[in-house]
Image (cartoon, rainbow, N blue to C red; front, side):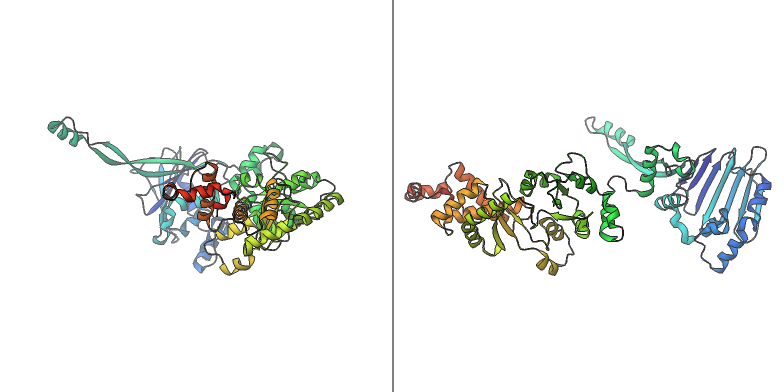
Length: 518
């Protein structure tokens, strides 16, 4: 490895063929040394706390904080058993200073080695147990930790080998003699090249007047310092989940998309400022993606009331919201779970009337679905969507259930009691539900058509509500049968040919073709 300082520039070169040493080359106004400088500055063991450092090193003290001794140069002996310094001053010869940290050093003119012209090269002959410092990643780590904010650039030069395909000249000559039509042979050769990378692009802004620093420079400094600039909200949300003391303070930094924010994101404070007077809670919906939640049937009734809904699509969002519970006195409510929606006296009277009117249908649907749902209710929280499935307040939402199922080492015992019982909600405003009500009243809950329709409605509600279907093959089969009916396709042409009487009977019967979707 080689460090080079050309005036105000340093270069670090990693040479994988030099497995026993690290080199540091400096060539600048302040980095060349005369022979007297080598003696006075490097050869005086007690200078600048060096003696104190060496005594502590011998005694086995904690020397991880090298700066406490006022030592820089002699920290090299932490990783090297011998250090060589080659320096050339404009007004002097090129000299070699060398020491093994044994209290002695040697200085001699350098007439045979590579002539530097001007500058200083430091060579560290690494200890056997410190060869990790020949690793490119380790060099980057050290420079980032100790020299990232040095005011002049540090470049890492790494010698690397690459394989390149070139025509095999000898094989080509042989092939030309034998057959001119044969393709030329290719051989792979290794080429060495030096790759350069600047390691300290960010400059120390704290040494400058704050008024002279632009917003772009502040942003660049934050990027370099935190490595968290593309999407820093994840760490803020993690802080809300883990840091109860600063939870409300961190919550002010949160940003979410919402039904009113468009392409921008909104804060909880701005959300509260836009709330209508009748709205008491902060509403949010969880899901896998923005595209999924923006089309959710759970939004219909809140949009009609002009209530804004936050979109939580980051897996950590629900963890954070569950820990917060409220913000500035406003309760945080997940609309995919059971909740009480604010309503006027007129809306309450209408809801009670509809619940009585559709009570029979709800009982019939519960009879068909059985243990698949805890209950079937007539909902005033849905719009034109015929139905949806909500979970209880204290269990997992559909989104959380999806996240937990994706964890390979999840606690299966927790899933049994945290997976909430599902509530199947039907909307009296939906024409499908209205027609289904008439069908049930006419034919009863045990009618094949009713059962088929209810099963399809339940499975589609699972999907649109964020759940997964336990038997996707059965669901797809029912959909395919619906397609066949819509296209007037016989279920099985071969069977139709063999039993025409059966087909005629099916055509003549007054029952709906939907009965076949079972």
